[in-house]
Length: 201
Length: 95
Figure 1 (cartoon, one colour):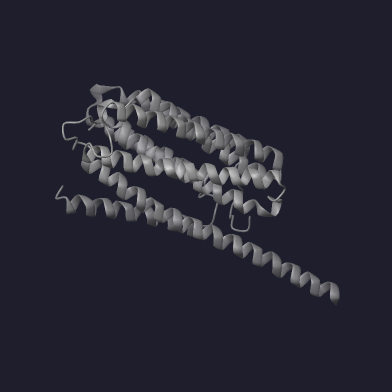
Figure 2 (tube, rainbow over the protein chains, first blue to last red):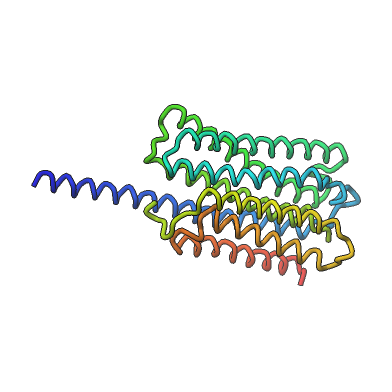
């Protein structure tokens, strides 16, 4: 009887854990849906002001080969992230940690590229207050960069937890949630890269 | 994962998808330099971006393999964005 009771409690705990995971994941998807609104509004604003340069620099100062390389780096970080997620779901902590470090490294490289790009643009006279185009461009790409930076911090926390042994196989959902966030940052850049940089209206 | 309804892809699939995305990015960049395409250039670039966007969402974010509710939540966000975009254009008298 005692064994049967233990089994019941174990089953109850398992299902509670699963339910908690499901709730966290649902909350993450709701939040990502709201983030789509956020970036969608900023992309809309950029499209409206892309020709309002007030005589200052416009889209012609973009360095497409450089931004293409940055975009490729961020795209590949989605691959390393999904491989990290996959490794943790297989309970392969070491492999997962290696892919997490790779993802954080690619994220940092992308951020370094963005800082370099912003510095170049400011040197060429495009600042936040130069024109509506400048304001819309820096707000959109700056907020995206801030999201990448937050993602890198979350990856660093996961790596630290893993090294300390605090990221047990039962905490796979933590990696999955950070992965969702990271992929979201990537898909937003897919849109920004096309709409802001590649399409010259 | 308790929330998963179908098995997630294999590591090999992830690599193949990444190669596919890299190839689409290369095509995008090439198209951006082809000036004689005219308005078709923008249409092609948007089409390629949409394919890349939904490939990442479906495979890397596992939306294709997870419960349907997540898909509804995310698509609601995209639909809302299109509504916001139309509203902004209308407010700016762009129509």
